[in-house]
Length: 439
Ligand code: FCB
Image 1 (cartoon, rainbow, N blue to C red):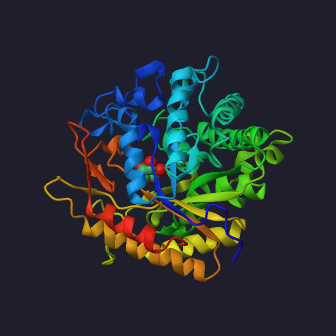
Image 2 (tube, rainbow, N blue to C red; image 1 turned 45 degrees about the vertical axis):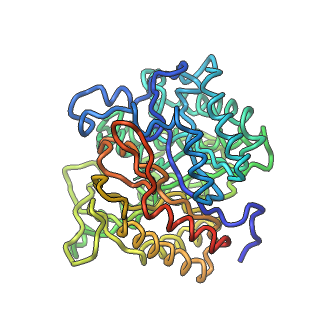
């Protein structure tokens, strides 16, 4: 086992700005691509928008008190780029930065290690108008935003993540079109991936220039991609989708090259020096994992692959039909550690359900986390260097276009009043965090 981090095992929870903050027009915040997306009827379930979400922008003190009561040692939150830089570049919005400053102080005062993520999908709309991620210039804008955030906060924030799930938001936003900006274009998708990687490299160096011992990483979605049938074409589709979904971003960032199947496809966007610029010093890798996914061959689509339904083979699933397979989680963690040889922090893992609030008993969620934490411990016993587990998520929130009906929180949030009520899983985690401080 590698030496312990000074902070010890990072038990805690994760959240993201757009999903919890609300107050999307308060104190000078600029619009993000999700605000723009939510304006179009039919895109967001129940016509939801980013307001009120979980009302965290107003209730953050109460939420820090909840974290303290939970016994969380660490808390991953995201900074909203459009709060800090309403136009994505140019003048800083002092009130926006002030919000994260106060939050950071309160976390430190509560003895909770802050882990800041710079991008959980809420790109300033002004930068989208300039071309968004497919436009190369954005990498520099992101590094500037990272430098501004770090200059203000890195004295107190030891852990930084550049992006949340870049493999997911580049694909859904530019290839399959279900997330903003809603493009379905292969060239835009490949360019977006490369520019996100460049942005990661630039931002990492910008943070390290402010605080040389900051531990900078990136949070990746890692879900094994399995073939939907025994057909060889489906096996090939799973291989392709796996490289796009799980590897194109971390391989470039941590190994310095794109995976085999897509290396040639990326060439039009790669300029001299890019791969070295992308491979910035990384201190850890964040893994978000929920369940395996399945792929099928589809020659009508770019890359000839698509997601498909999991086989109906009796494997249990959560109420939103995500397969429950702790063994796949264990293997994902050992694989990630073996491939990248970095300390791993589980930055998301959780259980979604539509819950009506008549009861706060969430036995299914507790059983899920118990099984997955057991699997994480197996991975550690097999030698995977895992330094933390952050459950998704503290509060019921805006589950993107799924609206607020699907709930992942340990704390229930009433849709009309944003009143917080602790679920049984909250008490379960509070006991666990106190009983097993070292994981
Ligand atoms: C992940 C996202 C997170 C949340 C969970 C359920 O892909 O990072 O924001 O929506 O899924």
